Amino acid sequence: MGFWTQMAESRMNWATPAVLAAFMIATREGYAWAVDNPEEAADLLLAAGEFPNPDLVRGSMAAIVDGGYMRDADGAVGRIDAELFGGMARFLFDSGVLNDAGGVALEWPGDVSDWYDQGWMTR
Image (cartoon, rainbow, N blue to C red; front, side, top):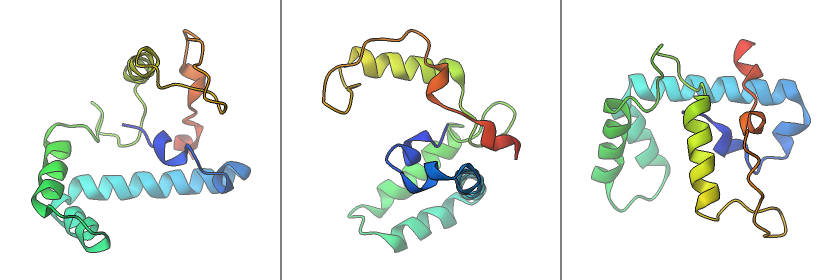
């Protein structure tokens, strides 16, 4: 599991690497807390928004935790698995949803390892 989706449209955080690293570290800590406290995390989410089906929110959180989707084999939260990421990128490419800013389909680059940077995790 990675946090790259949260940063896809952010302009402020990309401007200063220290701000981005602090944001990512805080986000990882929040996700780790949610994994360790899934019932409380679901309650907070429900309190913050309008969800027509609270059982779906609670069930989704349980499935995410029980399925091991938030922690990798070492127990870490937030680390991107390069093989899974590459497979997801290829799936999105094959589905025709990877486009440039003008809406033109991207050419498949082959190697997508430079599409993300986890240097913030060492801080």
